[in-house]
Length: 342
Image (cartoon, rainbow, N blue to C red; front, side):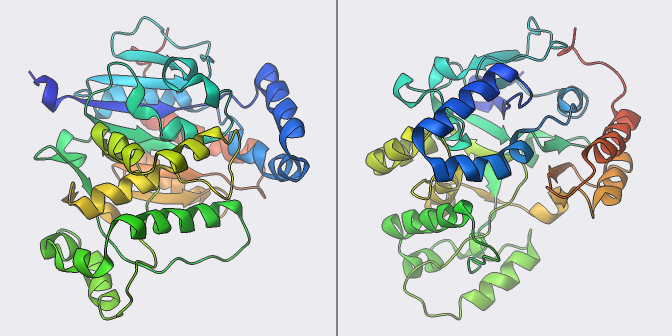
């Protein structure tokens, strides 16, 4: 049996974008706060928040492929799927009100939620953070996420690259500014070379050899990934200590804002502090975008090609058709109800 220090929790944040009361409240604050932001959210919001009706497969996958998980903290603004078994022993229903300071609520941005996760009562020191479009698709073991008590991750220096104007681009820049405020690129590149050039991830090592030739004084970008992210709870506490004003400002924004940090600031702190164990993310998971890659998504699910996948939504799709294809694929490998269901 695991000791308390070895326990690993999963954290999943979710919103029911079809909830009429939630939509009404969201529209109220959009109009109250900023007309331009309201227009932007009207264009992007439905895609970001719409429900694919596949949440039950997320929970079935956890029970089937990660039975060793200590607890699943299901984080919402008070919404609960009608099929959910609220009495499940491994389930902890977490309302935003229970861990996010009241002055930041209500929020319609993932950033205040992510940056306050360490405040969840009973959360284990080692936890894995999931968006609701991250799915396990084959068996995983604790060592896929933590080795020697450290989160599995990778350092890969890569220039920031933008192909369209988007608020998220500036947030990526902010995370790199945070990184440069607290770490020297030159010193970091010399420290723990085994974590820059690891045999566990040859492609990452090659890229780091190339970028290491660039004599830039400051970091110009770090690779991030859209698969489950392993964290230490104290990493969030440390970033709050380092940047209390910036974190407070971010959490005060009810919607995504150009001034925000996000969870990747915490990830970068872990990486540059050396609080991670190198692993090969490309073997662990893959990101797919609905539409052009739907057949690949279905194949990856049914043939269980990866341990985890991200199903990235897209604006220009036939939603009903794509939803049916993907959920049919999940049904082929996850047809049995889990203890998380009534």
